[in-house]
Amino acid sequence: MYAVDETDPVPLPNTVVLRTSFDRSTRRRGEYCLPGFVGDMIANYRGGVPDIRQKSDRALVGFCGFAMPELQGWLRMRSAIGRMLTGKRSTKPNWVAFRHTLLERLHSNTALDTRFLLRDAFMAGAMDDAARRASARHEYADNMLNSDYTLCMRGGGNYSFRFYETLSAGRIPIFIDTDSPLTYPDQIDWSQHLVRVNQGEVDHIGEIVADFHASLTPARFIEMQHANRALWESWLSPHGYFSKLHHTIDHAMRTKDLTAL
Image (cartoon, rainbow, N blue to C red; front, top):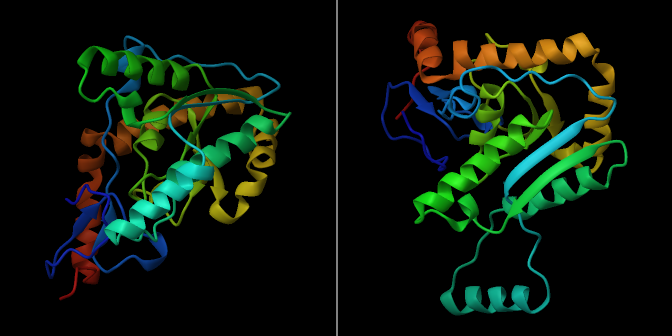
């Protein structure tokens, strides 16, 4: 198991590697998607009772978390000078700024309602304060559970804990596909559980979500909530994932889909 953001190869030959982060199109032999293991949103924040939403005419999109625009003006200049002085050059995309851009596009779409709580630091900057961290966590859960859809996209690694939390909550993830792997792709029909927005389509994210919501009947909207919760319990929770893992290992051994030297 390799539950880290890095995508470098694991130097262990003839191995099955379960990892959270890699690019789907350049998957190496022996690499399989490990879900981000998250707490049970229903048990922890709804007393174990699923909270089913009825369909409204307009989709309500939620997000609570770290999202900031690109640095502007003197802040950008100061950052550039700092990189020049330290010799550090980053070629990685600014996913936090990209997330902010997506939220702006969703918010500006007049066919959608939004419930956004933007933070200027990870975990609202409360990592060293247990009380503030617990409060921020409750705000995060309430935002997700009181929305129909949640924006889910990668951070430093090419995966999202928020994606698995949304499924745990019985809500519908808006999955920003940045060549991201998904767990058990041959067994799970992921098209039945999410709104997929390819990275090249993000300029139209508002229309994609609004059209998806309009296509659902009230019964199908409720059905998706139940199905997503059941998917997390049966396939993506720690117990669910490991109860199915023997199929992956059997396949890898039978087809010699193992890491190379």
